[in-house]
Amino acid sequence: MKKLLIVIMILGAAVSTAFAQGTKVASAYQYLRDEQPEKAKVEIDAAVKYDGTKDEARTWFYRGNTYLQLYLGAHRLDYLKKGMSSEDMKLILGDPLSVRRYKKLPKGEKYSYMYELVVYLSNDSVHHWDYPMEQTFKELDNGKLLDEAYNSYVKALELDPQYRKPELSPGTPQDGIKMIGRLYSSAASRALGEDNYAEALENFEKSIPIFKSANLEGLTTVYYSAGFSAQLLGDTAKAIEYYQASISPKLKKSNIYINLSNLYLKTDQTDKALETAQKGLEVIPGNLDLLITEANIYMHNGEAKKANELLSKAAEKDPQNYELQYAIGINYDKMAQDTAMSEEMKAASFKASIEAYKRALDIKPDYFNAAFNLGAMYYNSAANKLTEAGNLPMSETKKYDELKASAIEDFKLAIPVLENAHKIDPKDHNTMVMLRTAYLQTKNMEGYKKIKEELAQ
Image (cartoon, rainbow, N blue to C red; front, side, top):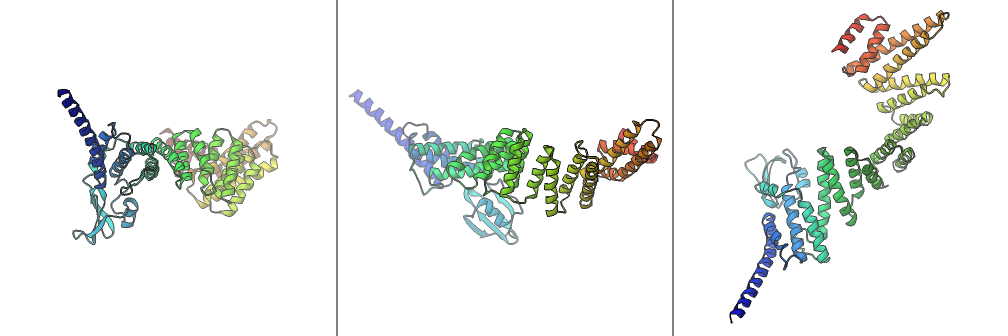
């Protein structure tokens, strides 16, 4: 009799425990319905550890919803700002549960949202908000809430691929996973905006398999953003991988092809760099940035003539583009120094480079790079003539005098341009050094003394 009583007591305890754990799952469900995920967490964390409920799809689905709701609660205010219009606020928070007049503010309105969030507007812009649950949710956010939600949904699908609970939001594990994919992408974009490239890349990489498996729209953009994050992080291999994956006729974004071309060029894959730029021009015909990228590749390969043809074509399309004129100047500058060219061609290229830099400065007078390069061209021409004159035999006095006089004229041409460059960037050392020499050669002792003092500082 005593043995029977013990058995009955044990069975009773087992049934009681099973009932209690089943009640925890039911309680978690009810807390979710009541928008109290912080309370649901206590119940569901216990239920997933108990043998009687840990192998039920509903247990893991509720856990996924719980952790997802906790994440949403913790990040509810991430993008909300004072002064924001009601329309912009709705883009972030969604439609409110209710809207009422609020007499304490001019044209005041009171927008009520889930988790006891109340936003107060005045004259259709956000004035302030009350969010008493924010601290509770923040304390529960250990940085792994989305990961836990995702793993829970995956477990629920393993146990029952057809499981659904339409009265909850989300109503299926599949919908929960889709939402998490978008949230990973959103978190990555926020981290990228905050220059946290490692966190951005990590979250973009978490979102990619979800976007792929769920066939979510925007996968190519996620690939591009992952590539951009990897590039900023200095991970060239990953950047190339993700940029390659982002290439699509649907995504007409020139930076994909430009960045990928530059990375190929950086890793000495010149053929792939050129192929990528040309592919970009097929997708976005006539794009100026891609034309310049292609021209830069030709310049890198020493094919200045091909580069010049492309740059000239681009300049016809956008004559007010100072960077384009600067690129033309650089290209002609390289041609002027090409020893394989005839003296006549080199002289013509020198003149064309000067004119291109001048056009760039006409468009943007405070463009330092153009001012510096133009001044440097005059300066280098003068220096070369002095070197040539110094190497002449003593008998060639006339030619020596001609070269010396021509060099002085070049120094005089260089001075106002270099003075402009110095005005734009007073700290640039190379500009000051060239000015010092030019002043000395032209016997401008006042200018020489002044720039010498600046160099000594």
